[in-house]
Image 1 (spheres, rainbow, N blue to C red):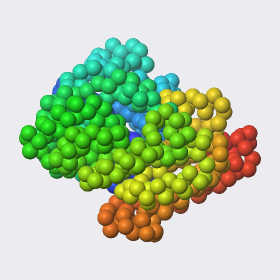
Image 2: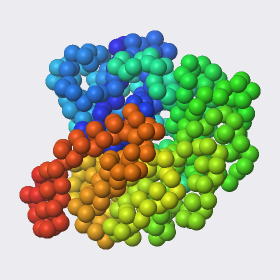
Image 3: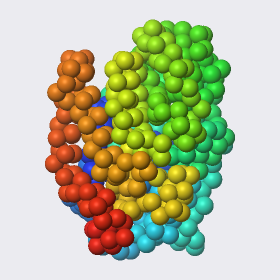
Image 4: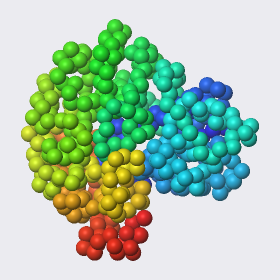
Length: 452
C-alpha cells in the first residue's frame, strides 16, 4: 500500500534554535521504517506550513502524528485529504490524539491512542483487508526497543540530507513527574532502554559528523550511558554530540570524563527556574546553589549549556524574569531558552488549571510554549507575555550579550533575530487580546471566543 506520514508544522514560529528546529521527529520515522520493511511504499513529509496540496499526499492511507501546538494544522491537512479522496483512509496518532481521541476522530477514520510501534503493521494490514472495526485503537508500549529498526532518514521527502545532526533515541519513559510535562502520561514512568551495543551499532551506521540524543534524559541510567560512551571510544567515534540531561550528571566525574573524551559539546538542561518555590511547584528537586555548581563544572569540561527556563508559575512575578536574565549572565549560560508555562493536555498542570477555570483559550495553535493561555497568579497574562519577549530580546537581539552570541553563532543568532521580528509582527493582535482579557476578564465571551 501507498502510505504517507505527515509531520504537521506549528502555525506560529517561535524562538527556536537553528539545528534543533530542523530535526524530524523520530516517532513517524520509526513507524515509516517498520512499514517500509514490510513491503509498503512509504514516504514522510515534514510540513512547511504552506498551502496544502492534497495531490502531493496521494496515497492509500494518510498518517498524521501531532503535538498539541501542531494538531489543528494536522486536522486541516486531514480534512483537505478527505475532501479530495473521500474513500481513502486517515489515521491520526501522537501525543495530542492520545489525550483527546474523540476530537481527533472527527477528522480521521481511525485514531491510535498511545505508542503505535508494536501495532502499526497489524493496523495497516487490517485497514487493507477491511477488517479493522474499531475506530479508536489502543496502542501499547514497545518493551523491547532493540527490536525497532534504525529509522530510515531517506523516507523524508522534503528535507535536505545530511541533517545538521543525526537524531538518535536510546530510551523511552521517565520516572520523574514534572507538573507541566505530559511525557510520563504518554510513555509511562518506567524507563525502557536500548542496549548500549544496539545504540553504538546505529551510530556506526550513520555517516553524519554530529549526533543529537533525543532522550528526555540521556543519562537516566548512568552506567548504561557510560557503556554507550565507552563503546563509542572503542570504535573511535568522537564526533561532536549533544543531548538532553539533568544537571546532576556534573557530579559524576567518570561520566564527565567520558563526555569530554567522546566530544560532548552541548547539553540541553532543564534548569526551569531559579525560584525555589517555583521549582517545588514544578516537582523539580533541584537546589539553586547546586545548579550553579553543576553549571560551572560542565563549563570546566568545555561543555556548552543550553539552559531551558519556564516562567509563569504561581510563585513567579515579573522580578523573577529579570533575576533570571542576571543569572544567565552571571553563569554564562551559552544559549538560554525562555518559555512560557503551558498547560499541555495530559499534564498535571493542565488538569489543575482547567479545574480552576484559569485556562482562557483552548486554541491549540497557541500551546507552543510561546503564548500565555492561562491566568497567572502574580502578574497579568499580558505582562508575562511581554516580559518573556523582553528576556529574549536582551539575550539575542542588539545587546552586549546578543553581540557576544552573534559572533559565536552567527547563523543561529541571525535566524533568531529574524524570527523574533516576525513573531512580534504576527503577535501584536494577540497581545491586544491579552490586554483586553486582563482589563475585562475571561467572562467577556466575545473576547475569549475570538482566540479559539
